[in-house]
Image 1 (cartoon, rainbow, N blue to C red):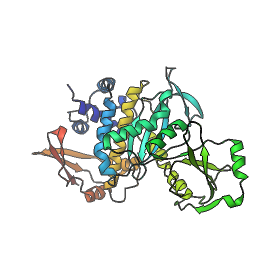
Image 2 (cartoon, rainbow, N blue to C red; image 1 turned 120 degrees about the vertical axis):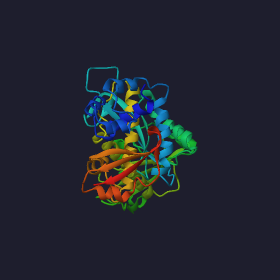
Image 3 (cartoon, helix red, strand yellow; image 1 turned 180 degrees about the vertical axis):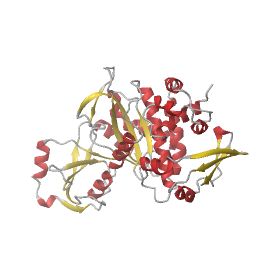
Image 4 (tube, helix red, strand yellow; image 1 turned 90 degrees about the horizontal axis):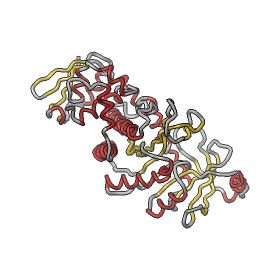
Length: 387
């Protein structure tokens, strides 16, 4: 029997090597190096790899994700920041009609049969901290509450801040966040009457500020700071109405925090773009839009593996001098996609890299100098050698 960890590592290897589908595991049928990575002689056949994903039930995907985040978060986020950006991503199904709910897909410009996925990313560090693909429409407005419960379970503390757009949840959920003491910033959907009322306000009501965000084209803003009443929201909510962000109509920010300035509200929310960039990277390199299956639980495994693979590349880039901000695709092409030979010496695994211009960067990182032994390879230690 193939151990569960070997199955997971076999599927993870496809994500790490820029392969789109599980069937592409056949490209490596006789590669002994990848077999060694998974603790096997060679990788399992595609039928075995696919069959394993059907056996994951009873919350096993979430247990894997929780274990990964709990151990990796202190490494990639050493300061323990608990500020997160939340977002949905719809993975479209392009085959025959199935019992999948329709979601709006921006790339198609319309609603389409899709699997809805949800992600949470640390704002201050490039790490995806949560993912879920087992979502139906009636559950999606409660995803911020579900993430808070998840984060409190694995860390013992609640998030300090949540940033998300107007389509992610409802005012009722905003009320729940406010009652739990979770700070949030989101965008409010606006109508023509609301916009006209805002633009008719006298000049004396407006405040001016400079948004010193690097490379931003529009950095001088004017804003109103008001308290507004929202449906299903107890009490008043703070609304920052901003002009000068490059749009014809003002942008309306909602927050329950009364202490920070209107300028800081805008500055904080611009960091939400990081999660959109990360999701774009995942679609591009980890082939997240290649729907793994029409069964949401199987897609959930694929999404969890995407989070793990993303974290692996973020860890590697953080350890390579000058590569800290490089995307996984660049790191793969310059560093990971390097030939070599593997040999064994006692309790050590010796990796001899072929000659390549970027090898000095790997050598400088001293990744093999920390005595980390690989548990699924009988505790053997990796050593590097360069031609």
